[in-house]
Amino acid sequence: MSEQFYADAQLYDRLFPGGEEALAFYRAEADRQGGSVLELGCGTGHKLIPIASDGHPCTGLELSPAMLAEARRKADERGVAVEWLQGDMRRLELGRTFDLVLIAANSLLHLHEADDLVACFRTVRRHLAPGARLVLDVFNPSVHLLAQADGVRRRRDALSFMDPDRGVVHVDVEERYDAAAQVTRGTWFFSADGEADFVVAPLEMRSIFPQELPLLLALGGLRAVERFGDWSRGPLTAAAAIQVYVCTPDGPGSAGP
Image (cartoon, rainbow, N blue to C red):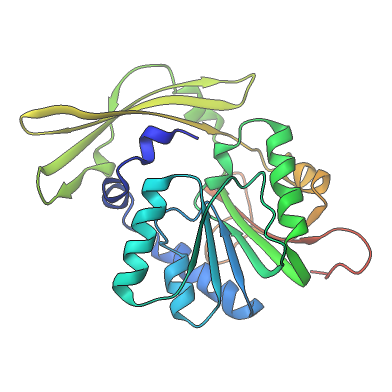
């Protein structure tokens, strides 16, 4: 994981403050499934805290201590009970199962090797109760955009945000795409007036293509029973920006679509 990128959890939340459509989708999935929820790579609790506030017993796993501390702070501030755990989504043994497991907001893409992705899915498989589901989302790779990751530093105006101490913060990104590894290796630069590059953080994210993900899931003992290309449950097409998967354990006794 690109640890430095997540070292300032409040800065991260200001950078990515939205996602209300995604949040509504995951809350609906939790209500549809019922029961207990485990989120792997829960970040600062953007999705899990509202799900817990809806009455679902929730557990959040996060590798970054800073993100986990902010999740605890936010949950305490809202008076919401969540079990927070620090750990690796590839290696988790809680000794109990859950009715719904979530891997949201591209968290899966911090795993770059196929073996790590399969290990994560096998971990999920061990923690699924009978009739339980895994729901995840990752971006849908665009070959056009990946080709533009040419190592040139560019301003991302859409990512600018207001910081209470610094004022307007601008974000520049410099990226290169490693096609053999399917990993975009980038550096993010955060600047404010009079404070250029006050944070410079590497970020590496894998691309997983739509024909590839079902095979990785199968190797992990899971199968996709629903697949969407947007938060309104539209079809996954070439033009879709995201891939959303609903999965069940593979094999005898698994739930159907």
